[in-house]
Length: 366
Image (cartoon, rainbow, N blue to C red; front, side):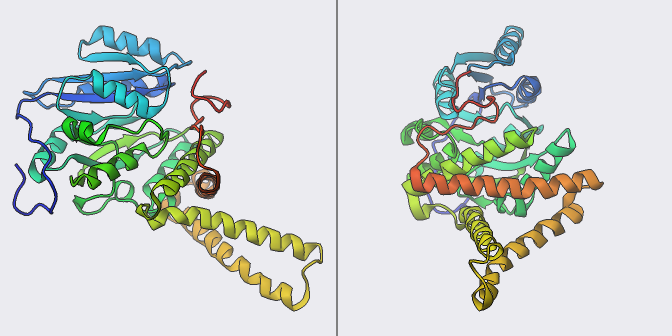
C-alpha cells in the first residue's frame, strides 16, 4: 500500500501480490522491430505473477503478422487478436479486453523494455497508490538519420522538455509514456477513446486524473524507442501528431500545456517573415516601413542560432554527418508538428492518420 507521503488523490484498487500482468502491444508494419520488442517483454521478471502478451495485429504488409504468428506458436504466453481498423486506441482496447489480468502494461512494437522495468513499475504502483505509472523514453538510432532524430527526442529543444523525454524528479505527472495501469481504473474511465488516433494516451490520462486518481512519473523506468528511419516518414508522423494535438486543443482547451503552442508559433513567425521578405524583394515594401518590418526576422534569426548551437555542440552528435542531420531534423520536426497543429485547430483532425509506416496513402489500410 502507498505510504503517508503520497500526494492527495484516490488510491487505485489494490491487487493481490501474485496477480498476473497483461502486456498489450498494437502491431502494424513492425517486422524489423517486433521480435526484439516481444523478447524484452517476455524477459521481464515479475515472478510469481503470471504474464501474457496480447498482440493486436493490424493489416501489415511487411510480414509482421506472419512473424507474430510464429512467435505465438513458440510461446503460449503470446495471444493474438485482429485489429482490422489498424488504429492504435482500437487495438489497445481489443488487447486489453482479450487479456485476463488486473494490471495492464502498454508496450510498443517500436520499443524495448529495460530489464526490471515491470517489477519496478509494479512496486511504484503499490507504493504511491497510482492508477498509471510511466518512465523515460530513451530514443536510440541505428543510422545517422535515426540517431539525429533520437537526439532530438531526448533533448528539451526537440520535443519541448516533457519529463518522459528529458527526465526529472519522481512525482505526479500530466501523462505517462506507455504506462503501467490498473485495469479497474481503465474500465471505470471508459478505456482509450477510439475517436482519437494520436495523443490517445494524454487524453486517457486526463480522464484518469479527472476521476481523482494519480498518474505518476518514475525516472527509474526506462524504455528504448526507435524513431522513424527516413525524413519523409518523420515529417508525416509529426504532421499527423500535430494535427491531433490541435484537435485535442479544440476539445480540451487550456488543459493542454503551453509548450504545445511553441511549434505553431514558429510556423506563424516563419510564414510572416517569408511574406515580408517577398514584399521587400518585389519593392511593395520599402523605405522606413521596410526597415521596421525587419523586426520580423529577429525571432527567426534567434531560432536559427539556437538550432545551429545545438547542432554544433555535444547535442548534435559526433562528426559532420551527425551534425548536418541534426540541423535538418530539428526544424523538420518543429515545422511539421506546428503546421499540423494549426490545421487541427482550424479544421479538426477528422480522419487524419499517421501514414509514416504505411506508404503514401492517408488510410490505415494497405
